[in-house]
Length: 47
Image: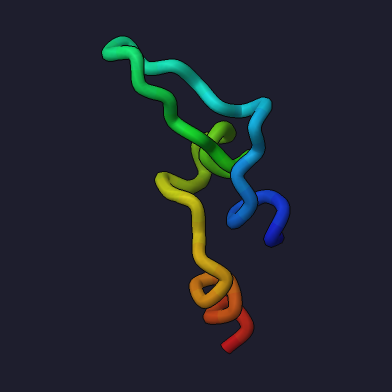
C-alpha cells in the first residue's frame, strides 16, 4: 500500500503545459488517488 499510495515515483513524473512538473504515485497515475497519501492517512485504514 505504501508503494502505491504514499511513495512518489520518479518515472511517473509528468510535465505540465505551463512547464512545471507533477510528481505522482502509481495510485495517482491510475486515477485512484488525487494526491500522495501520508503514512498517517494510510494507517487510518487499519482502524
